[in-house]
Length: 500
Image 1: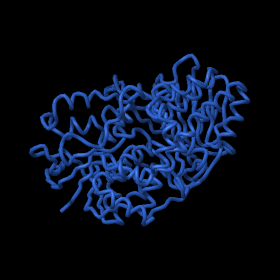
Image 2 (image 1 turned 120 degrees about the horizontal axis):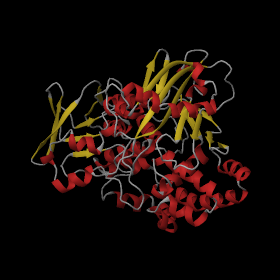
Image 3 (image 1 turned 180 degrees about the vertical axis):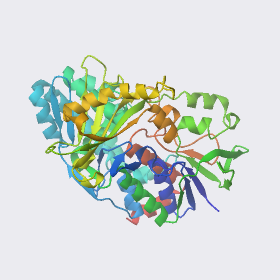
Image 4 (image 1 turned 90 degrees about the vertical axis):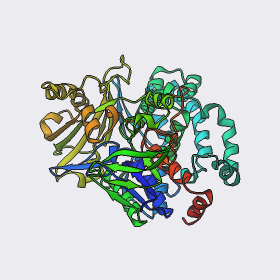
């Protein structure tokens, strides 16, 4: 009945499924949750609409955007209303507050107010990174695939761009830290670059791959930043509409217990209700750890491969604080903030760096009249969390670092709260069915590469944030595109691109 089964409706799974439906494949997506979107879903409580995860986007509407989400929505015939804004937010260090502008020159002017010499060095840093972006931007993700057949595609259609890549080969596989250490000496600017990398990849400059930051700097400057009206859920709804428009199906509240394997070939899935659904291709949007421990039997995989895969480093989970607050007297403040509490501590220390999003600044429909929605989060390891008698007390203790960060932005935040929701690593592990509540693989640059879409089992593929190209909305959408294109011939992809 189905050509392809997709497990999980995160952005990676929905992108792969919708694109394959566009190719004419009979696709069904099974989602355990009653809401689509995985770590990017939205949820509503007492009139407040919350983003569960990401809330920072760029290139969702620009016609020449490099954002894979925009590219696949174009292919599906879908679009999103957005609100553009600038500055994109503020970084609050213990010693100063730094407004972050999309435009690189405006960004540099703000750096120069803090450290004139550092601004000159940051200019050298961006001058080294942006040519890589210029080389990448002419090769759309929507045209790429994960097998050898990408070679003739690149040579026949994108040879000039490949030639532009040659002068940048030294940094393509290197880290941002490699570039930073040859261009920047100013300690404050180094901390700024580390913070930008951490917000992007969960790792500091030494661990973040250079193309990821080159993409961020270039796209932010060219396309600007914007927020989808309706929140992250609006992106999910657009992908679901695209999936269903082209004949694909989505089943919510439908948990897959097992991927069925016969003679090293995926043949379908078994649902929690015992029903068996057959298909020759299965795509897992679950994490690499959940796919290989919960959806497969140990004997389904080669022992060495399974061991190495399960040893893939993971980014920690998070503490989350979702608030509905009274908005009286709050005017002219920005929607994104990052607070670093202690300059002497590493920015990756749990609780030290806190991210804050107030999306109702841009989209008033997310909150009742006279109110705002607030989402604050910080790294928090999974280890040590148990649902015991001390669980609620520990939640209240751990969330104080987020309240302290929020007080930098809204000093009387505690008196304004009308709704409080606290999420822990256990919340992520339980509700999102993610291994230890992780937000994906944390593979440092020069320490390995993200696993690709293939598995040792014929007909079984993976997408999502533990898959190439990694963490973040553009990256997981990219993983879905790479997987989908790999399952059709290049001529079909080129035909689809010509139809745009």
